[in-house]
Image (cartoon, rainbow, N blue to C red; front, side, top):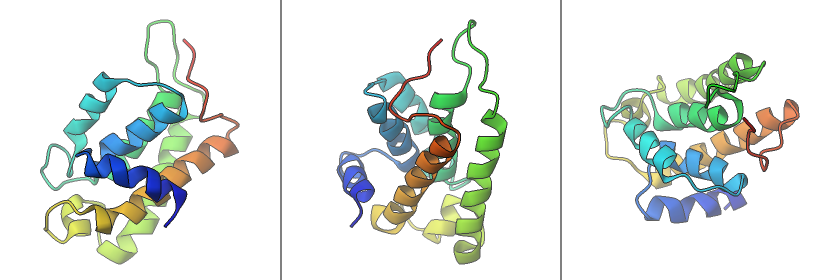
Amino acid sequence: MSDTLMDIMPLASRGYCCSQILVILALEAQGLEDPAAVRAASGLCNGLGKSGACCGILTGGCCALGLYLGKGADTETTADRADLLYSEFVEWFRSRVVPDYGDVTCDAILKGGPPNVSLCGNLLAEAWERILTLLAENEIDPSVPREA
């Protein structure tokens, strides 16, 4: 079991969904807590509001990247390479998931069943590792919060 999966399992056992876990991992990497951001990510749980639509790993991963790249105040601008990094993450996820599951929806990945961390845990860990790789390739330190 990977170190990342060891970080994920306790969060899942405490009731956080995939999208929330990726946001929590990004916040923890920065030494931050932000219950409001974690609550907001709950709207992405189990495929956009529990609809079975787009997987929370994909949407939550984009949110986690947004903590490093997005505009969060009037005095900020979106990072220069934000669109490219979001796109690279989305394409990685599609190429990783579609061959095995046929689509990037929770329904496709879970085969219409309930959320299952044993099924999604490895994919969640891979997604976090991919986010860290994208940040490193773009010389963004995941431990440093974005400054306004």
